[in-house]
Image 1 (cartoon, helix red, strand yellow):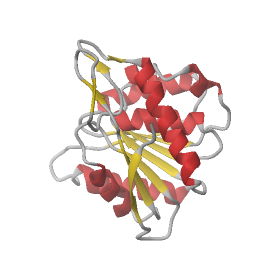
Image 2 (cartoon, helix red, strand yellow):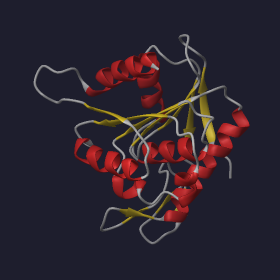
Image 3 (tube, rainbow, N blue to C red):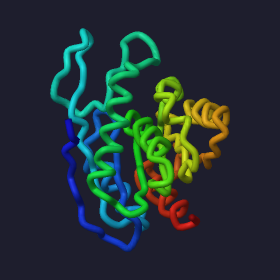
Length: 205
């Protein structure tokens, strides 16, 4: 099944970008963060085509893959399906050197697609990805060479997961930059701070 998506024309000069939202987040929210970075062009926001109930029944929704109840694990099959669907979409769109930006579940899928689609995506921004889920990406993801530039981000919800994800990538000899958002009083709100950091990081590349 192919992914539906929203396609936003370029608001600034920059690479085409695919954004993969987190669970419970509207795709337009992450599109807004990407465009506010001032460093991307056209933005494509796939809409997750399925979710699962606790008993495994597939239903309509915006969840990228099934999270198994009771522990930090997931269904490898549905996670693999999500990664392959995004790679298929990238093939169909024929974007030139795209950037992938994903948050939460979308971050795991963006990382998996960026590594599996090695040499095609130039950069991947992975926000608040669970290391337990990253560890369950299919073996084919880790077998490819030429990984894209990677930025791992931890917001208030995901800062504690950042070290685990970075260590896991290091185990596979994949280098990644890391950035933590500070929730201290007087600090910039998460979305504007994230947009600013993404813009700077993409500009540095």
